Length: 437
Image 1: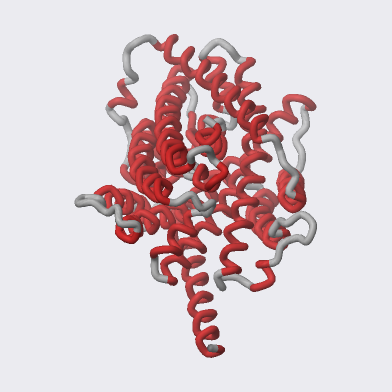
Image 2: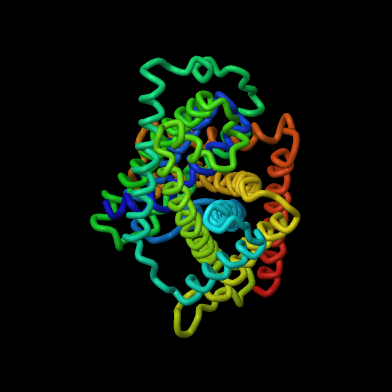
């Protein structure tokens, strides 16, 4: 249970019904449940691949560690740069979500809203301080808060479904007015809901019976989260049909859903739980990004000064500060320009997903070679890795052409430009290293 809790708490399932599903609905409409069903199938394929690595290795590394063992240097560099962007952009995304929900609660309590840029800076500064000082926040406390929030969401969802009766929502069942373009874009954000499902692998030998419990935790977290998200997606769209409102334009979807279920007070509790989850997500992303940057520096992909750790705290202090500032910058700039917290959450969450998609795909491609090196390759063992990699790459390519309109259409090209710059740095550094040798 403790190992499973690591992955589940990193996914932060509370934030999906409160913030992600409305954004997916704005794109996929009545196909929101289908976007989550497809995302669940794709993530389960990736989970099966990561579980195979974890059955033979208990090293407490990220996906970059798996990739570096098998892939050529330039491909492992692609995984490293992709993961770095993914964690930093996820941090920016949840900062946007944090200041949105903080202002919702502050407005309810005081009648006033506060500067979004100030709230973004505040949550980032606190997260950087905690990561820099290595202050231990009780994982057990955060897990109980997350579990309580999910329980409240399940109660609200059950009440909405009960009030609707035992007949299906025909508009959702027949995907009424759903477009292929909307489904493609919605799928990327749906995949964002699962980010962190593989984090049980970071426990390494700290876990009890790691070669057995970690693979099970990775697969179960993906499966349980997928079922939860699909049911929530269906119930939220149904609830808003009942209320006669647009889920994709809602600023506080769980408030509306709680009213439809006849328990409006539960909407407030869910918003509080979402705020806590978003703060924990900001801290987790800065911590993870700093570790990836530290490992990149050790492998020559980043400046040597980032290899240093704090003399007393033993944390990658410089990497923590740099990744924290990198996470804050886009969120604060967009906030200062008037972007809503949910827009920031959606845009930067989609950008982060492209990094995760590429990292997941390359790790899956490397699995057959990994199994051969460990002498456990069997006939047909390459089928699931290739299916998983294909699913990830189709999700990426499907958003490159035809080009979507609006901000979401620019995100894949921002990612590709960033990755090109990272690989050029890798090539330049490799050439200089050869000259010195």
